Length: 497
Image (cartoon, rainbow, N blue to C red; front, side, top):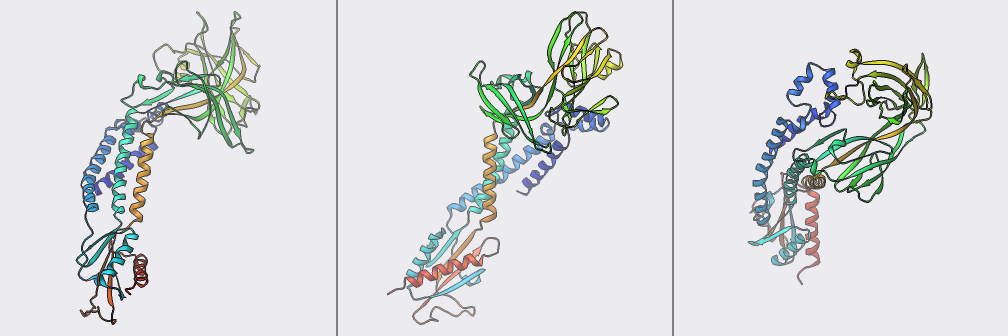
């Protein structure tokens, strides 16, 4: 068991990098940023799997070693405990006076009746009682070892459950604007991770539309609540159902949980081309860079403006409550959209979306700007209804905004088993810490410390000798005295006539 404890500690230690370093299954962008910030250290860490700790071979090796060690410890201990449960309490020692707790009761009952009374009282106290050779052996507290074994069996079950969750579980994250939605397919997630035994056909059908999003704040502008009203269907073309989700109130359906993990704003633009063609309701999520004021940054990419036309990109900042900061700059002073505005820079050229090279949807490729493939053609601070006229006659109008919600859908088939095994671990640990194995022995007669017979010290009486023992070498005098007092009272109430 010592080896298992060392491996458990090592497993906990090995999991620390997973909480300190960005992990690829959670955020590829964060990992890329870490590489940019630490160009020398990051490749070394990546070589040893520190950016995907829980799938690293060395982490799996510790996990499997702990699993094997637990099985090797538990099998013999479990069989040994089963034998102990079936075995009778041991015979009473020849000298009860040498036990840690010892008492003698002068009685006027017959020896047999005294033993009958003592046996009855001990059984009422839930002791396992065996009477043989004119003495009583009683024992209880085997629940301590039962709890110990249950704790380690539950730990083994917890490890199995976590492995099942990693193999057959999946999760995906997506930003959804008001009035839009998504379905449970890998193609529609912004980021996702799935166990090695999961493929697209294993995803349960679910489609969700975000109807409305509400953010409420306290008077000091600290967030009070974020809620989203959604419509969802469990099958394609199935009946719609309504629900409201919040930060700590996910949607639970068919073993899946849909969490609300964040929020933000998506400014809306319309673009009027020189030939009069108007493109309306163009929007993209802008990510908050200052949670206190919800100042957000992002880019709206417009690759399809017609044959022969340059592609456009609107890069800028959204300010929910704009305030002039001087020098033509704006800042946000409130997270609530009381006076929304945008500060945008418009680029024209080739975005490179069809080059096959992955791009960040929230930023522009700065190398394309440096190489002249994207040219800056205008900039402005706009409030709703205001427009920016570009040199070629194209007009860009800021028409308003939508709110978006960051949603995460999670399925873990081991969720219930993890809960049950964790509760079993808690129950087993409680029994291990609170229960102690105790033994009580009762025999008529008594021997004095000098070896003299004390059975006739009181004329017409017999001595009933009681000894107590507690596992671990310590004793509980209060409990032992209660046992002695209960037997003494029962003997006094039921004297021989």
